[in-house]
Image (cartoon, rainbow, N blue to C red; front, top):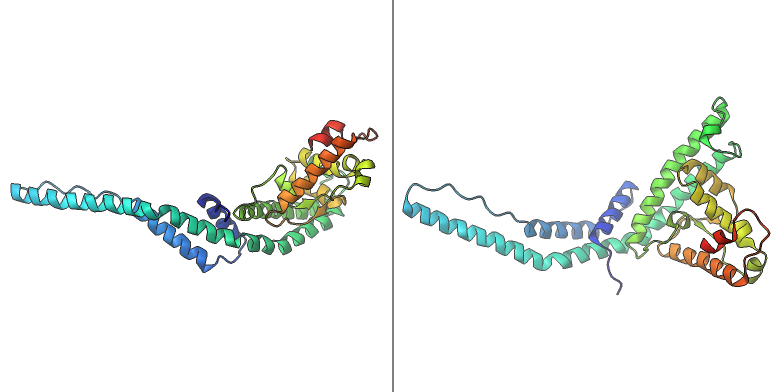
Length: 272
């Protein structure tokens, strides 16, 4: 049996699901309530000390009563601690069981937002640098504004996808933000021989990195290229896509990188 995610990962996944207006099952809600009840008991505060009575007899009785209250609070904390790990695991596993379904539910809005960026990209110039756009052209202004609105939603959707996938065992990978939304082709002997990784596929990855501080330009570049396939990764699929990238790197390194393109250097090919 796989290890459950941490409770903080599970909580992030639930918040992401709620933000995306996805169904959070009663099993998760009840497990969260159980976890909360255990936590509250585990953090039971000591009772306030009573005021000092006027007589010795009353003082002795007050001390006795306060001692019993202190013992009860301490015993409650200790007893709750015996249930803490199990309650956390139950909650984490309940959330993990939802991860794949939640991610799958994001596919339709993902495709819709990608289509919106693609439609806007058709009306934007080749250079989508906001500092060089003709903001006096209403066609460009409108298209950029629509692309920007879709990209903001895409960035949040991908972040939510990653939070949900994590609880299903998706531990991430280098360039997870790209691999979560796009897949490179698997390497073949012919493709490696023809230098397609460096000339066609690696430039997409390199450009994605270069544009990390320009999200609109980054996504416009991504929807315009046709080397990688745009699709929202299911939990675990990011690792498969990362493995494909690694397979390309290993194949190129083993074959010797061809020296006939200035798009990406040999070092870049081996590194990415």
